[in-house]
Length: 266
Figure 1 (cartoon, rainbow, N blue to C red):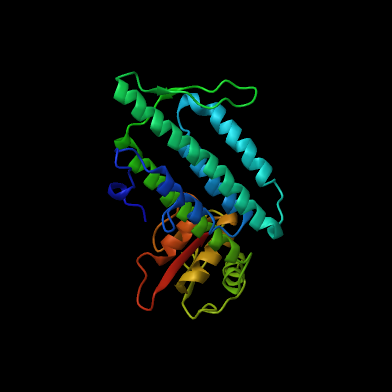
Figure 2: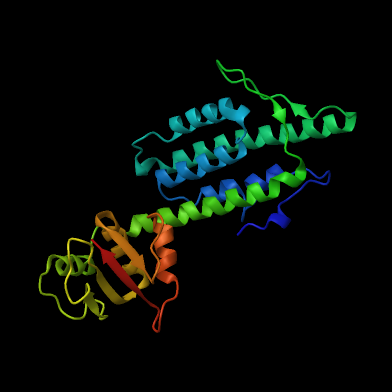
């Protein structure tokens, strides 16, 4: 999504923060506005804050914006308040944008005068913010590309989480197989259902394998089973359980008909 070479710059060579935040296709604010849940909205805004204020001396800035974000999106927000929360997050991000534009201007002014490139931060209530070396223009593209890609990943993962049911018929069949119940040789989606080595699942780590699982049921089933054991998807065990990673593995190396092989080790 993000092209580090194409990140917008002003004619003077600094990052064009107006476009970084406001561009209709790649800007942080339009991207984040696509979040459909308070959790995803908060995750995206937090990512921007942490990436843009990542130096040791930026802690007061992070605390300030995190406090404002917590006021915009409380711990138990209502879905009916999404419009207001989007507006609040957009206003917060524009505060950050305006500050970045000011810092870039100070950077250019200091460079022109041949002074040390240090800038002041706006004072936060009860805290003394730290100044510091300003990233030169060439240092920002990769960081901003990572932020944009991260926003998209959060939104996709959140959308997948919202569609994942707590269980499915395939989950029930694989759990029944693990208990030693009699199960059909083919699961609900028509693929083979194989039970451990030699046809038995043991407490020491036997496995239940479902072949020929369509991609979305693969994600749903893996998500449910991962909480009670280990899952292997198309020969790979995910290092962590996230909806986005499960979707990637379920789509990887699929055989004829676009189906996956899912193994659960209870």
